[in-house]
Image 1 (cartoon, rainbow, N blue to C red):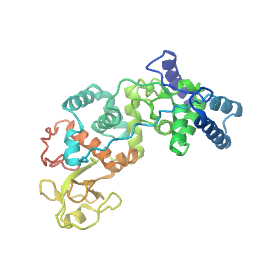
Image 2: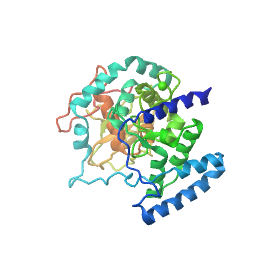
Image 3: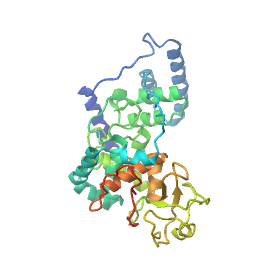
Image 4: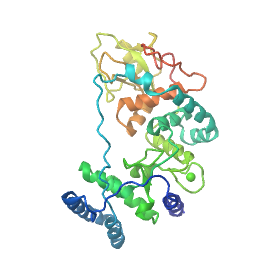
Length: 355
Ligand SMILES: [Ca+2]
């Protein structure tokens, strides 16, 4: 039953490719001119990779066929990020992270998908605003998608970055499980599924059929994307009884522990002089072990973060990522939407109690 379901799912992705959706990537086969020694090295790399995958139980003939059709996508690596002369801090980054148009769109999506989000909250225990915020940060609510063959893209990435082959194997498992042609499993040039930002391995582990049509489709179904997000966060230990954390004030002479790895009770942080951003005492709740994080150092913004924040870090360990999701969730929070920041030291969470 499960296998049949997923066959249909990814068959859906295949149909999209047959329909010729979106611009096709520029792929260069090893036999074509222009690769030279690099192409030879790539074929050697693939031969080694295929050898490594043999113990995984794939049909040998099928594996030969798949690897023979892998093409190197030479421009698969993202362009290097050019650093600004003055690096952003949270003080300047967060207030400018989302335009008012994006905030309005997020609020609208929260309303448009209200029924689905309520179902997901009931099933997975994730507050709706966090699913919308995660979607916004990961893909900016992209409703269109590219069509890059993921087996070739993940192989090219693994080769170029000399990284592990986990995503190549995941792509192979998806192809095998759903009897797909390699040109039918499509995604973005960074090796992720369009719209959701899932990698092939994440789709294998966390993909869910949100609209109950028997398919898990991250190219066309918002419901499937949101359900998969909910499943991912739930599996990371999300607690529906809590929010993500709060901005706090720390004494100027504070020299105590900080960092996500150090956890202590509110009473301990209170004793160390940590207060809510508005100066009031911390919540009187004994069942939580928050961490103090200061992504910009001791002189930057300080946060006490909870288990749900850790769940966000499981997606991306960058505090700017987790705080972006958290911040957007506050900006669209029903009944408590924060006003736009004006660039000054306006608290982004002050006054909000632990839920
Ligand atoms: Ca579906």
